Every structure is written in structure tokens, then in C-alpha cells.
Amino acid sequence: MQLVSKEIKAVIPFYGSDQYVDILEGYHQAFDSIQYHADVWVSATSDKGSFDGSVRTYGKWTGIISTGKQLNLHGYWYFNCDTNALLIEQGNFFDATGMMQAVYNVNHADELINMVEMTSSDKTETEIVAFSAYYQSLMNKLEPNVLSWKFFKFRPIKIILIERYKNKPAILNHIKNISQEGILEKYFGSFLAHFTVEKMTLYGECLNELFIKMGFSNQYIPLIAGYSK
Image (tube, rainbow, N blue to C red; front, top):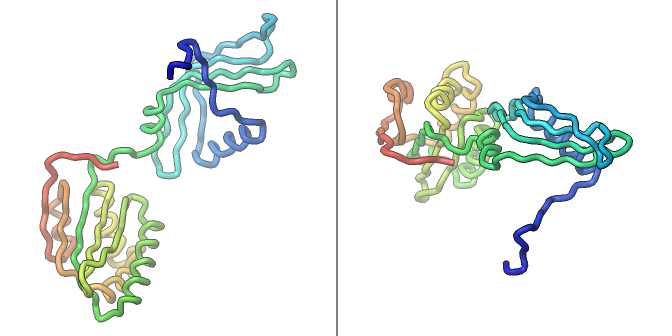
């Protein structure tokens, strides 16, 4: 640390033309309707004082990521051009935390957790393992607002299922999906053919209608305080 000057300037990482183009294409693949809205747009000059296409700008990027969350990122960007007015250097300054908040759901304040106690319905261990792997993959694909779906072996014939939902609408949507004419109706039938549900314990802020719609013996444990990433 004693060898680092107070005047040091670090610019990392370095990208070549191909890598930079890949980055730009990646933005367009990751976001729908990605757009830049300039609050300030200033033409810059070359070392000789002539306008060469370079730009300094303050503004924000907007778009929608695959999770459905909207990007709303403010910052400063500069674009320097060569003598042929082609982009040769680009940089940006924005709050890294702001970027995380703009893109990712880093705190699920309304999360609900459901712990399901089950036993095997006369299935072999091999059948239970295979079906559990299949069903969790199905949930991951069809229910984007289900944060986690994990089966645990508790005893030789007892299984614990931990379900994590983003919020109350997510768990209500799941109940709708496994009900008659829902997208998971036939798969839930197979679920009940493999498992016998003994008890459900729901952690978090609960709706009265959840107890009615679940149809199983259940317990409700309210949240005092906490966060989830």
C-alpha cells in the first residue's frame, strides 16, 4: 500500500473492439426496449480543439430485464472518437449499488416461506428422488415468482419441502396454477401420487384466503423483522 501514489488513476478493465461490441449486444439481449434518455448532451473536442464527434452526457438508461424489473439507471457517460469519428474510448460513472438496485431484486421484503411436511406415498426412494428433481425443474421454469423450491430427506419415508414465494400474489398464483384448469394441474396430480401432505407451516404475512385455499392442515407464523436476498 505504501507504493501507491495518491495521484494514481486506474482504468480497468480494457476491452478490444470485438469485446466491446459483444458487451453492447449483450445489453440488447438482456433488456427489452433499452433506451438512453439524455438530460445533458455536450459535444466535446479533440486535443486540437476541433469537434470530432466525441460526447459528454448525463442521463439515464431505461429498459426491462428478463425478470420483469424495470431499469432506471442515472449516470454520466463519455464517448471519445478518433479522426474518422469512430468510437475509440468510452467510460461511465454511476453508483454500483444503484446498478444492483436498478437491475436485481436484492431484497424480497414481502417474501413468504411455506414448509411442507410430507411422507412418501408408497414410492421407492429412487422414484421420489427422480420425481423431486423433475418437479423442482418444472417449478423453476413455470413460476418465475417462486424464489426457491427444495425437497429435503428428513427420515427414510419423510420429506420436507421448502417453498419460497416472492410475495402474496406469487403464492396465490401458485394455488391457481395447481387448481382445476391450471397450468400445473396434471403435474400436481402426480405430486400427490408421490407425496402425502401431513402439515404446512407458512412463515410471513398471511392472507386469510390462503388457509381456505390450501386445503391442508396448516400453521401460520407471522414475521417480526428480517430481510431476504
